[in-house]
Amino acid sequence: MSHGPRLSRAFAADAAKAACRVWGMTSEAGCRIVGSFRRNTPDVGDLEFVAPLPVDDETDWLYEEIRDGFDAGGLFGDTTPKLAGRIISGVKRGFLLATIELDHIHVGTGEVATVPIQIHRYMPGDKGNRGWIEILRTGPTDHGRWFLAAWSKAMGVPFDRQASMFGYLRDAYGGQVPTPTEEGCYERIKSKFIKPEDRK
View (tube, rainbow, N blue to C red):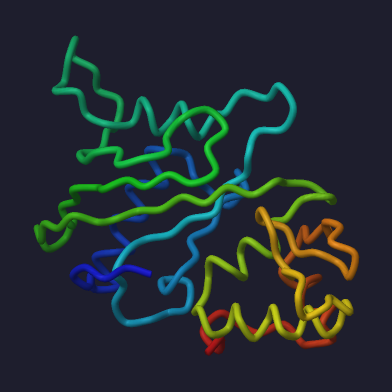
């Protein structure tokens, strides 16, 4: 949850478009904007994304795109699209969470602001945890608490045991439960899919 200045939805959308273009964070690449932006709030405090982790010896393309995606002053006449800003923490190969600040100028209005960005990684595939990470990171916090309580009841998780650890939902015995899709997560608690804008 962000506690800084709020950004208009239009400004946040323009900044997200720029970041996605330069860093290649497309839906085809398994990336999604989450947080309050996904819930269609009129303004946001930051931009949050989910993106896949590399599998096995796969190159961490997102790490490389972020590393190379900031303007270093136009050295050697590089015309590759770049972003202005700074890496705050976490950007390394196989990172789970990165915090970045993007200095953005809105294309249409010329408005300038610093946009806090967080990128959360999930394990892709049928045994991965994309669904739970998307629910958790889309929020809001109260919805996450409600979901965990419903999950604990549905899975028989004892009251003294955590229903979520290290990014995975757990069963009654503490074992990891694969959650490749959000829809599948809601099915497990016998709930219809709740649209992000309806999550309270």
